[in-house]
Length: 165
Image (cartoon, rainbow, N blue to C red):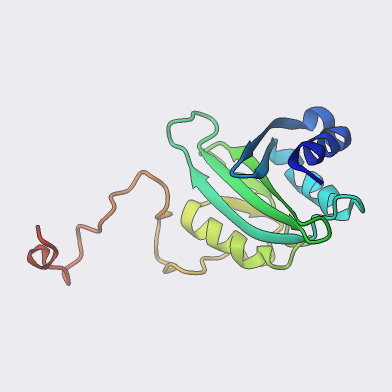
């Protein structure tokens, strides 16, 4: 199945629920509304012809310059049966970034959603244990948001002389 055929099959299944589709680096990319993401991914997994049975990656992206769509959850799906990859994107507002968890569809989403929450502050509704996974619990910010300085000015263990500054 080619990306063109995949795109036609996806539009036949979901129609207007697909906001946008494009091909980037030989991978079909579709954009869906956050409220539709879970159901669309579930159908992509269960459809016998498409069979997107593996979640390769789930992550977040911060676009501070796009008002109302500052955060994006990106799902990389893989169909072993068809040797196809698909990227699904859902954009969220920065005020209350929340989307339904896909841990009931893919167990591997558990750690990936926790990491995305930890670094971007995206809430995954229905996640069994949405807590920080890599950063300290005391952190009151999400470090991958492009609103914080790249370096911690309060560090006492760093001497700029050793970094060519």
